[in-house]
Length: 223
Image (cartoon, rainbow, N blue to C red; front, side):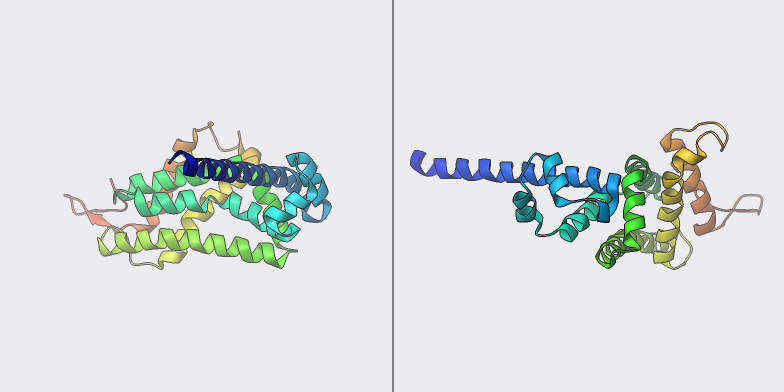
């Protein structure tokens, strides 16, 4: 038992070191690409920033474009969003949308500069555009599955679920990207959760079913 355990320990340590190096290169690439753009960044400068050799960068990512696509995927937060949408939603529409919206808006605000860089570079780099489009479609489709269930439950209007997904994420994305420009020009400063709650109100007003109240009038949205 003792003789066999040492190779396993060495193997685990090696995998941890490889993972740390991979992450260090990725973080360095985010910084260099954001500062200089794709064309202005070099794998040499990324390697220097990460504290590794240039061949190490290529050993981990294969090429500069593969590294850039990994940066795009890193900024997507796809895994976290997909996990919340598929595993942690309650079925209560307003609460669930606020949870998704809070995570998404904070991600966009925190990574605004990098996301703007990716959007700009995607216009010139077909591989980056393809990766960005694929990630966005995956996020929208995950949310669309949730909306489809809410339609079946009679909570939402029977609208195109992918369009609804794009509308919900799109207004949060637009606000997050322009956050610094809009700050102080939209009335009192609000906490992220308050901003999300207002966007959820707007979204629900257009997508939930009208319900008749006791006096016979119609009320839109959920309580």
